[in-house]
Image (spheres, rainbow, N blue to C red):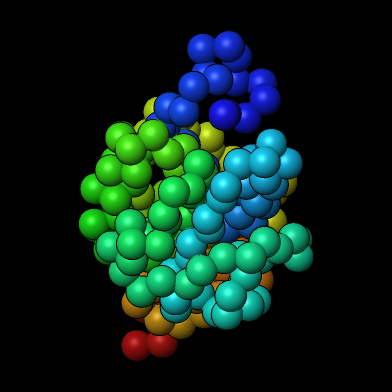
Amino acid sequence: MNEVGYGVGEMMRRGRIEVVCGSMFSGKTEELIRRMRRAQFAHQKVEIFKPGIDVRYSEQDVVSHEGTSIPSTPVDSSQSILLLAGDSDVVGIDEAQFFDDGIVDVCNQLANDGIRVIVAGLDLDYRGIPFGPMPKLLSIADDVTKVHAICVRCGALAYVSHRIVAGDRQVLLGETKEYEPLCRQCYLKAVKENKETQQSLF
């Protein structure tokens, strides 16, 4: 059985991949949780996974910035999802950008087996570069939803998660003290300001 609202043709068990992407504070995880809860309401068997490194709000649950949560299973590799998905109807994966590249094949295999896969993740890192396996996940998805935060400097739709603390590692878990959502123009201005500040120190 599939979720109410997908039409008569979707009543059979058909696998699909849905990707929800955007910057930080855009509501990606909130949307993932919303879709998973709708599936639960429809009495479907769901399993939710997140990277083991993401313990910002909870070691076990998937938690949105708004505080909404849903039980999940932390895993250290994409292959673990295949082992633990079992006979699920719907599989949710949060913070997909932190997974290894094998997550692409895992999602494909789950969908080919008739499972609905809902993936949430950052499409771009703090430098505006496509993040980890997300570009490939976007290309194989049956459906892509791009959500937007609001630029904290001008109020336009945000484009990227700008890092406001020192450090050049791609993976740096954080919240509002470490990142701010910016539109493209404000992001470019912030990068220029940072370069000018660094040059003035030397």
